[in-house]
Image 1 (cartoon, one colour):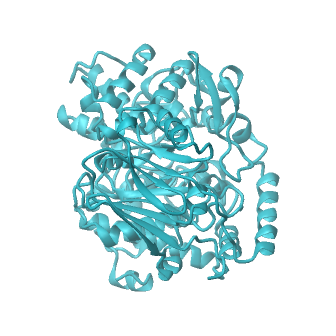
Image 2 (cartoon, helix red, strand yellow):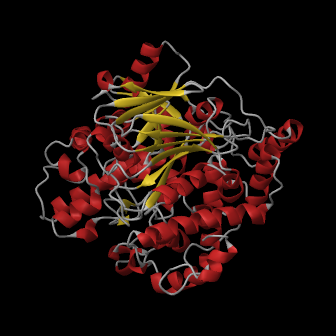
Image 3 (cartoon, one colour):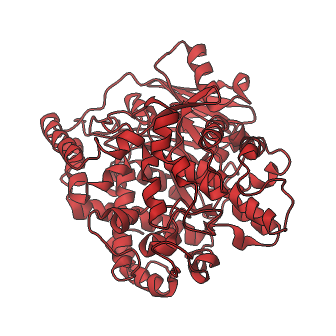
Length: 593
């Protein structure tokens, strides 16, 4: 077959039978699901009954790259891990960058589908073919330690490893899959599913190439995209200079920096944990992903330890969310999360939830808001499920429900919310509430429109037009994940530019409308699976705090999130009925059986 951005093969691994098979990539998958998250959603939907215990052998774990992954297109380095989530019960995906996704494509596979479970620790080795190898020697190791050990034992310096740490081995429900040091497929507990299957790592030696349909056209489109990224400041501005944390002072000034478990929207110590402060005190260098001209990744050093990060979301979750403004302690807790294999958003938010529960006298945790000295100890307890950490490893919702106060959990569908208060962002709040993987901003980042003003500037406090724009952002976000390109490009690009890249690489003439339709199909497939798993209209909401308790200071003072205005309009925009179920005519239009 002529080159089209795809490797053309899927690796199917049955751990229970210890079998591996190379299968051709179904041609219809390219047209219907594009790649990455789309391929993973298709595989889970075909193989896993909704409501299946995520830790059961019947669940599958999918690693999938998109056609732009490794193609040379700017920022085309992403891959997804897709499964039934042990944190939320949804059909979830977790997206990561670095070099692992490119290596997978260069090794000859678009996706790896892992089913069953092993009785002993294994790792999957791929170098064009594949084999299961004993991982007993790596059991108990951290993620970076595991990657270094596998590289040393195989003698392959260029090998790329996606691994779990002790948190994944112990099925912590917010466990991540880590690759390339500090890159995380973080959300939804995908690392816990990997641990339940007794897979310590996937190690890939990619020595091939990723062919594109029209190299000359792809080069021209790539140059055009690079010019746009440069002219709009994405490759030269704050994201490059200060990393993602450069946005923190602005978010604080807007009154939407969640502080002390979302009790407030402004943090008095924001300056101490800003991207600028990190650049001045901890930064040692940048770390870009494959084909990235931005280089937002940070290499920092604190407490005698060098590591990657912390990112904005991490600084917030382990910092302001917990009332902590000690940047070195936050960085050190971040390094520990990376090595243990923990999603920093859910970990920090769960700690913040426990702090509030303790302050209100419902549980004696031994730590309170502002306790920077305890931060590393708590993270370690979660990763190893020791003491109170055994409860916190279940996530904030289960922790709060255990003590009889589930409303202390700032989560949607059981997944902890990210670092923006929805009372000051009506559209982003709608995305949080309706996200098919649970509380999330990157699944439909209305922040770009409501704060940055891209591709349109929307008043963050109004509900008008938010339903339609939320749907558009969600559909495009699904398509971007499927294509295999960094979501940060969405700050300056929109559907026509992504369609140009996909067409140049694959040779399939797809326009903006067709790309959005692909994203809409992926979104509806996840929604249908979730409905089958028992999720209902009642799950499309935010914690009661956001609906009834107004913010007290800053620009959004007096605001609450207005569900009753937003949700019916959103269902109508989606072509769903009043209960949030896709209508038959909507499914027919999307060619969904």
